[in-house]
Length: 354
Image 1 (cartoon, rainbow, N blue to C red):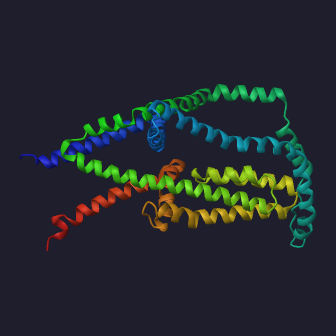
Image 2: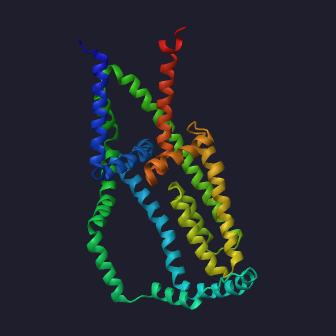
Image 3: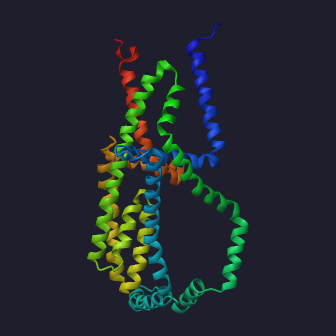
């Protein structure tokens, strides 16, 4: 029985796809810096193109955009480090005092219901003293043990940090040539369709990046103003960090919340001030989840607000934290692919046949 050529071709493509997926899963640790570099090159390439209009060569433009990115990332980190280093030494003295106030307020109230909520303040004070002060030998011993156990992992992380911008720089220099060679690998009869598909994907991902930057700026302004309104002295660094770090879903918001609550507890030294700061973050999170992300990101990439929430939950469930990061851009690509499949289906004989 002769084999249908179309069926044979389908099996070949299926086998190639399965082999590619298997290869990616095996080489995932090695490919990580290269994938990150490709993402950086894609996001930063418009900046190189813009500078080329002013006769800035590609090699210089690529270096400029990468340096700007590293400076922004370093500035974001430096917003957090002074806050932590300034606030942590105060914990040893301030938190026990706040716990005494809490005991004075909560213990009589709980006693009415037969509960004992009295907190052992002295034990907390000793724990904080040990945690924050510690002994030099213990710290050195712990550090040495950590280096022995996780040295390879640390070196891998450091290697990726160094390798990723280097690979991104070379990809930015050869961006157009890489795309041209990749397109030449596509069969000639498919180049029009593939080129059109990636043009639509590029447009949609560009809309996503613009929307993400807009969300970050709006939230940064909101947190700075709202935290300053409730009287937090560190409103500027903490608010800017929280707003700009929301591109990492949940983690950016969570770290900003912890920093703000810590600063509020040490500054106000009462529950009401901490609750006001927590209320600001509650409003900000609701605004981001229910309005900013669905409207400014979902509408730009053509996703309904409900689908945005579903995409975040589904990708997070399937791929964990990385899935949350790629949920919306991956949904944008899938949306373009689904639109193409829908058009093909509607124009097919299967759909139009009476």
